[in-house]
Image 1 (spheres, rainbow, N blue to C red):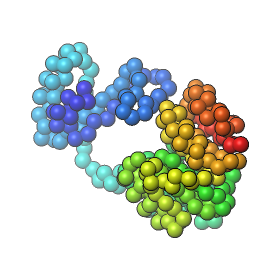
Image 2 (image 1 turned 60 degrees about the vertical axis):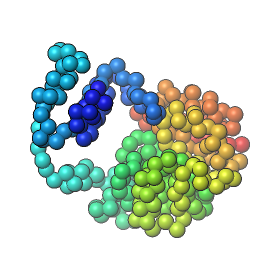
Image 3 (image 1 turned 120 degrees about the vertical axis):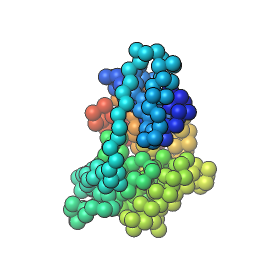
Image 4 (image 1 turned 30 degrees about the horizontal axis):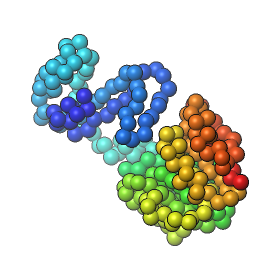
Length: 273
């Protein structure tokens, strides 16, 4: 269906979960295992909607449920900006977009613009990491944020006293966004963005943070374990409660874990040694 919409001229295609069960995200290149889903295609106004309808019916029959509506034009940039407001993510830490004033000048304020990279601090998995960092400040520590996205976790570590932070990501756009955010927060002199291939081979970090997906965390278990020094700490987030055991098992030979939960999400905090 996605390919068909694209071939018909869709400039964007979105797939959403339509079932009532918990959200399960699959690691790329797999697709989410949803029993039902919605697909939305965004087309330019001049596209003939009847051609699209005919194609859908030829593929799925006339009983296939669909809806066509016109999207009213508006100031999309202003609409997008209005969705972001300051949010408290720890006892004394806030995330604030650059176009707004921080709510509490005396607190730790993370000035984050997401750009094209994930990570504004509002998702439960990111908030779990930020809250832990605020309560367990990595003073003078070497920190690795693996799968850094916007760089929010590395930047938080630096503003909480870390000596140096490494942001690692496979997406060049994420690395660029994280460097921009590090400059906004005046910590770029202590921040290094890189992909996994250019990360120093013998790096030994006090704290390694990976807020990704359960299956990816399992695949990266050897890599992430090797980055944590003896007596160091690893934070594994992006895990649903029912995925805790299989992630723990992948790291069990090297870490003693406890979990911190929020709603359906879990973060594993492991100590090496």
